[in-house]
Image (cartoon, rainbow, N blue to C red; front, side, top):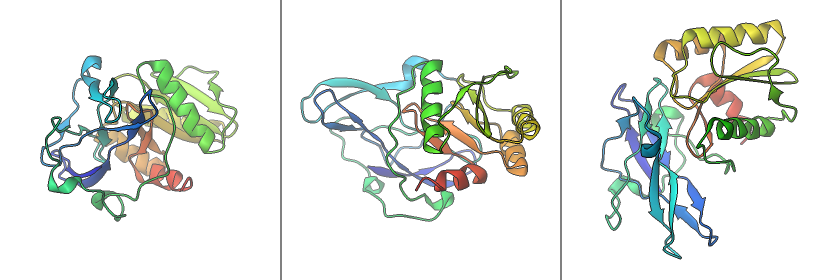
Length: 234
């Protein structure tokens, strides 16, 4: 199911496709999106509010799944509204054809199997799985601990992961970039809460890919360098 999403902060238009989750019975469970409701920016995270109970359409067994979220390029994290059970989806809820980049939506990416994020360890696991898809199979904890977040490293790559509700700052981006320059490696930044507009601007200038980890454990590119890197997986 796909819906049109407009960011209330920058008015940018996007298209969001809800992921499906495997029920214990084996059937896929899709989240019922409300195409008519306005998405709400995530300002303060309350862990209990990040999960929603949805019943499997086949076996009627309830399961807890991450609430759908979308990272806007302006740095705002949007929570996608869900429809009430039995409520017909809005007119925008039909599957969408492939569209242009970011402002008009993006073509669906190949399915990414990861782990739902409930802890910092899950965030590390999801990040490592994505890095393996990029060809980095030797990821480990970085020898030097970063000022904030979790540092990861592999051959030719350094990574900063922020698993808390703290948004990335320009200083985070600059420190990561300087570390990568020192080690002659490329760098990537992953976060659960997105980044400030100044941080995204700095990342764009320095060519640092920024990824938002949604609660399904799927990294979403939120700037042009991340888009270019993610496109290599299609």
